[in-house]
Each structure stands twice: as structure tokens, then as C-alpha cells.
Image (cartoon, rainbow, N blue to C red; front, side, top):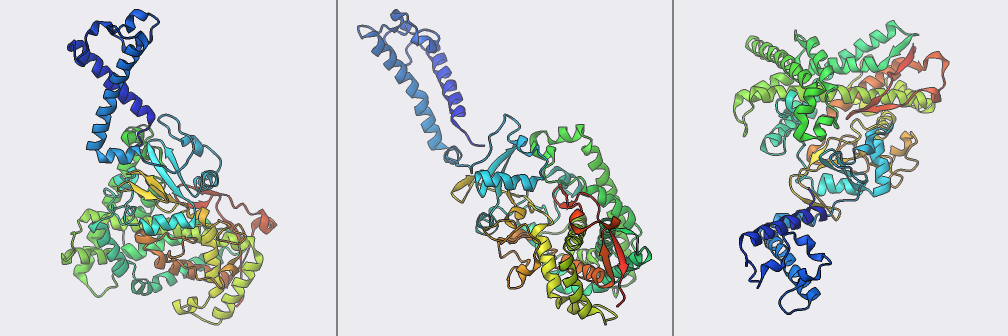
Length: 562
């Protein structure tokens, strides 16, 4: 917290009162000839009664005011000595925060978010006013928002090691086993170990390829359902959520899990409790009290019990399955249990850690992937010429094939451009996930205070006219000669983040998106219900950490003869 002039005034008043009390206890604390010349109230020394300024034979005004000046210098000396003994205090005092909106007592600048705009859109407007790196205090929490590719580079690369931790969020802590999943665990040996497990075991390219049969089976299921209701409106939002749920749960906990449906229902309810800007998280000192009064505390406890019970059943089922045979294909739970049993980890995995990783991956994979597929179909239906080009490429490449392989998908360059352009305009996490500052850090000439939350506005960066020509237009061809990819090395394009905390599930998500979208465009032609034109589709979004369509996407599918 920055100590400004007001705080120093309070300190000066405090020391002044201490001197006054000392003077009353010791008649000659400063060696003055006659302390009775001073009033009991030092601030009354400016009285018009000239007798009160008499100091022996000296002139009234000079004697009185010089003594007051000497007395006033004492707290300055004490403060100077205190600051020399507390160098960290000097850092805070001299902190130069980035510019930002004015603040209200207790509430900070929370009034800035009382608007019809979504949070990332509002932050974009504030960046236009205050600059690409601005500070905003929401409740009791300092936020620093990076809104340009250069400031994003500073956060995600230059100072990545200092800003690699996550803030403590109430719902994640209560439901997510004290934030011990890969998404929100603090930066350190435990997190590095989880990251290594993900990249080498759980979500490696080899592992993702080995799960292609599950993706294909789920894709066939969704095609069958759409064919049954062809000619009628299809709720693609609901269908994408269902297929994403089924795919990740089959991948993570297996096909024969008895508790899968209960887990899916509890997971959907959990997702609703995870917005980045919950009121309780903006007032950490009162978070328990706020969550008690808004009812979320009881809801979180209930979900934690339910999730824990289901995860216990899942783990027991996997342990029993392991006893029967080890020849079956490993799912993610099998991998975690196997690694836990080897005991070769630097930081041993507890059973709660295993549960946290499972929960973390399931929640993350469901919400973001289904939203992305929904936005892809929304943009395609709004741009018929792009839809035509994508379908033409897919049908020419895949039309004669009875089964689609991963290698076939790799050749669909225009489809890849469509997906990239959709992720530019609709990043799954417009503000990525928040980071926290482990120590006071200089960033772009400003000092970021300890424990401040640092946010990268990927949505604003992807619409910056300095980086993109006609940034608000949906134009997949812009990626024809581009080297932009999903690895986070180009800071004007960050759909999955960058640096140490880049999304570890990118390969898994892209394999699902590419297969499902290509098959939907291969087998069906699409139209908006009611004979509406492309520009009549409602594209309004809502935001609670992830950006999704505000209204479900309904389209009419007509079977295409290959």
C-alpha cells in the first residue's frame, strides 16, 4: 500500500503529540528557560495574545516561531532515522504506480466497472485513457493491467519469474483443495513438478495422439444426433458443452466410471463460482464474511463435499481396475496414480493433490473449448464467404475418406486460419489468468507493489490497430503469411497466454476443436433459423473470467451429400 502525504501528516501529528506529552511530564525537555511561556495546546501558539510569544528579552514573533520550528524539526529527525532503519519503507514511499482512475475510500475504483461493458472491454477503454499499463484499485486489491504487446512482453517474459504466482481466490481455495491444482498453485517446486507431469505425461503430444479414438467416437456421436434433427434448430452451445464434457471426462476418468454424470453436474455448478472478480476476492480481509452473507460459503462447502465424494469413488474404481489388468489404455487418473505410487517425485503427491489436478483439468477443458467452438460457428455463419471457403477446402480434402485421421486435419490450412482468427477476436480468457507480484517490481518505469494482481488484456492486444490491420474485422486470410501460433512467442497474439504459465492443454484443445469443426462443416450446411441474414445474428458476449455467447447459438443443419 502506498504511503502518501496524508499518512505522513498523521505521523507528524502523532510525534508532535508525543513531544507535547513529554513536555508536560518533563518541565525542561529541550532545556528551555521557562516552559510556562508555552500554551498546553501547541497549535494555539499562533494566538493574537502577544504575551504568549514572550521568550526572555527576545522579540515576540521571532522567539515564538523559531521555537515552534525547532520543535517541529524533531519529528522530522525521528522519521528520517526511522526510514534509514527501514529501507523497504523507502521503496514503498517512493513507489510510482502506473496512472489510473481516481479512488473512493474503501471501495477503490470499483465504480469504474459499473457499466454495461464487459470487464475486458472496460479495461480497454481505461487503457486508451491512462496508457498501456495502468493501475486500478478494486476494493482492497491493487490491479495492474497490461494492454499492449510491449507491456505484455514485460509481464510474461522479462519479469515472468517474479509474476509467475497466482493470487488466492476463495472459490479455488475452498473447492480446489487449497489451490493445489496446476492452474492456481503458487509458483515453486510443487508447481514446476505439476507442469512437468502435464507436458511429459498427462498432456504430451504423444498422449493426445493416443486419445484420437475417443475424439473420433465422440465426434461420431454428435454427428448422429444432428442428423436425427436435421432441418430443425440445433442448440450448438448446449451440444458443444456436452461433447466437451464427455470427451474430457472419458479422457480423464475413463468410459466406465459410474460417477461420471454426477461429476459433470457438480462441475458445471463449480464453474459458475469461479469468476475472476468476485466481490469476496476484492475484499480479502472480509472474504469469509461476504461469502457467508451471499450464500456462496455454504454452496462451496457443499460442492467440495460432493466433488470429494465423487473423486474418491473415481480413484477407488481406478485402483480396482488396476488390480484386474494393466493392459488397458491409461487415462489421466491412471497416470497420476501410477506416478504417485513410484515415489520418485521431489514433492510427493498427496491424494488431495491428485484430486486437485483432476478437477483443475476437467473444469478448464470443458468451459474454454466449448466456448471457442461456439464462437467459430458464430463467425462462420456471419461470414458466408469464409464458410464457403472453409467447406470447400474440407470437402476437397476429406470428402472421399471414410475415416478422418490427425494427419488429414493437419493439411487444412484455411481451417487453421479460421480458428486462429476466431481466437484472436474471442480469446477463451480475455484477461488470461491473473498473476500476483511476489515482491515490489519495476515494470515499464513504474513500481508494482507487492501482492498486486497483474492482468494481461489479451482481448485488447488482439484488437490493437498498431498490431493488426482492421482489427475488428473477421479476416482469416491475415494469417496466410503470418508466423503467429499458439506458443505465446508473439505478444500481439496470446489466446493461450505465454511464459511459465502458458496453458498446458493447448494441444489437447486444438485436437478437439479441429476435428469437431471440420466434421460439422464436412457433413452439414448451416443457416440461421427464421430466414435471418448473417448480420442479424446476436453476437453479444458475457464475461465471468471466460468469454461466452450471452445467448445460446441455434442453427439449422442440412445434411450435405458427399
